[in-house]
Amino acid sequence: MQPLSRIHWEDAYSIIAPQITAEMAHIWPFFADFPIDVRFLRFGPKRDIRLNWHEYFEILYLQSGEVAYEVQGRHLPLKQGDLFIVGGTQLHRMSAYRKWPVKGVVLYFLPDLIRGAHQTGEDLEYLMPFLVQSDGFPHVVSADTGIPGQILQLMRRIAAELPAQSHRGRLTVKTYLKMILVLLVNHYAAFRGSEEAYLRKQRDLDRLAPLFEFIESHFSQPIAVEQAAMQVGMSKSNFMRFFKQVTGEPFVAYLNRFRIAKAEALLSAGDKSIAQVSQEVGFCDQSYFGMVFRSVMGVPPREYRSRGAAVATPLSR
Image (tube, rainbow, N blue to C red):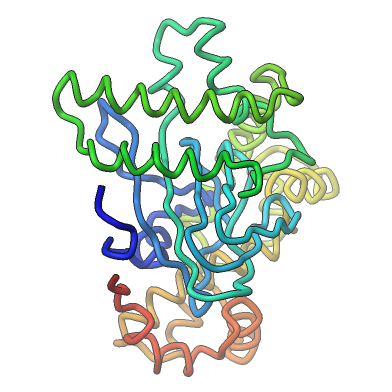
């Protein structure tokens, strides 16, 4: 295998951020008939990836650096050599960068690759660490256990086989993936359970789906909490409690983050004034837009635009 020092590390923000939808879902472009991928990503704090969830399962090995992962309002420290795993329905993102450079090897796969159409108890057993991730689940596997290093080698073997177009190649990839999953099943033996936590979270997100569709179509207009509650058939008080429980943040904070993400794209394009951008993403007051933008991005819109070209350039190896 090629040494990690010679691998091309892709810029995580430029790949992931455009793939996050209004409902905070990250959609990865898998091959339809073989949904698994390994990428070598470089992360940076100048343009944070916003909170997201996804249908695929994720394993990240932190090759270098030191960060914190935000998961449903919790902030979990991750140091070089540690492993982070997440089942997907919990909102998460890399939220703090404490030591440089930050590089991660990520493995994404859809559970149906293991579970299949005719699932068995054994299939679900492989996926157990991802299906029982309720509040308090320890998403980080310490380098001290020796497990992350073993999984990194298997991830790299998978990467070497992709895209796996032959029957032999696909069998090899699935075998390596199952070896990874067995290591995790043994590590998380104390958290054995069923799919219920995963399915309950998915049902909650499905209930919010009409609201996310509404936001995608109407974010440029004023959206009151009462309007949002009507989209899901709840009272204002129940909606506010439910939305925060499911997404990890209040509705207004989510809406502001979503609008700022839209503003980022418009500012990067560079052909509209800040006042125009402010109006187009739903802020009637430009000064308020500037305040919210700075609170989310860490810099005012004008400064963000002035350095946008530099931070948007994918980082090389």
